[in-house]
Image (tube, rainbow over all chains, first blue to last red; front, side, top):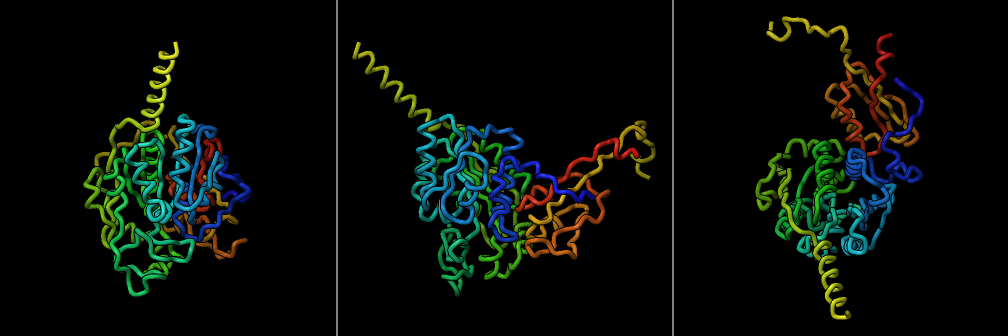
Length: 282
Length: 93
């Protein structure tokens, strides 16, 4: 047993002065950050060419914790800001780490249009089934009959199936994992960083303090126990059938296709127009 | 007796199984218990002591059992645990 304090091997990817982070004990956001940082370490990513963008929400703090260029944006507009970054300098790798409320409630329209254009930004969405930061209101991913502060008798709204939405909108890589599948999630993030075009990973994440407390899962271990019991790995199955229910969470990679990305098409078009105008001038 | 353990491997003297060196950063731990629960060899256990954040950090019960899968360091939300391989010279002593 070694007693003296040794620095964590991944601490060069984190802003040490911000650690320890503010997330609750058992929160899945720390695991998402851990897997992201592990993937960066395995890829030996160039930190000067990486931009982490995040929106508002608990996981929005990620941008402040990673030791890269980072952008903490307004609520729901993380994809809009990231689009600007990517179009201004297509050489940068732009990764969005944000939550379900940010990306799919207020930012839903940005998401579907970024996926339709197939712009080369990478989205990692932590889905904790509610608005955790503001006190646990029901959101677009709250399962049916779940109890939240704004649905004390059970939720009667149908939730979004995020992987189906991303696949239908035209994303070139779509996957879903839970925070228990850390190895596969890390592999998936590595794949996401290497791919061209719009990529999306949904991470089903435990929120024991806010969501679990009202739904008979008071600790992070109980929520992880639910993921362990309910999750089924089905790679390349139909995302339309991958609904999240209390008995069944279908995880895996759903879509992996090659498609020309928007920033390439856009910059090609600009080059064409420039050539034509130069011909006219001469 | 199964066929594979009838014969002693020829290089059993040379090959040493890797030994782990588990590092805990106790004051970063928030006591979620993931490392204790998901360790396949049950190397960790909750300790009696209380750290700076007011929770019980894990303690190492049997470091020799560790198989260096590093799942604890991958699942830790607080970057409070990591596993390194012990240098081979140390294990020879």
